[in-house]
Length: 132
Image (tube, rainbow, N blue to C red; front, side, top):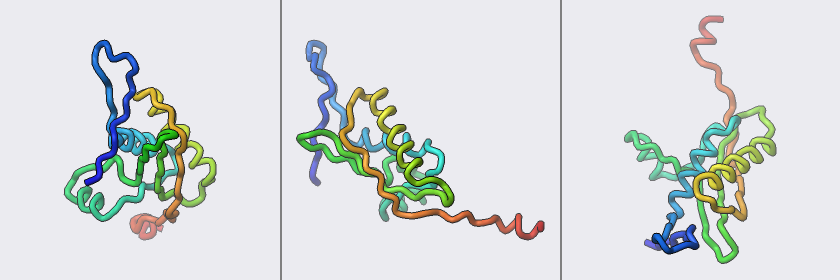
């Protein structure tokens, strides 16, 4: 298993150090993205799908964090609702994530890349069709 380095967020070491694991950034980004209107779901992999079936919530589903020499890169793989403005929702997701990470970790993010991997079409509920 390849371990990513921890992020040092404290320059003042007189009281000790503060480090943040990349997984924490993934969870914060996932929760901030989920709060954005127009987002239907985040794309996960097989393992997150199995975990969710057993009742475990995967907040980092569809989020990939990469630590580079130049900074922090975040990639999100999202499914959006049909009929919304894709550029506007993507920008709102980026803004929400940037603000949440700044408030919670004081980290500046270099890039937040949104990959739209699907559109969820509105499916009428069968109860609505029976009642008409």
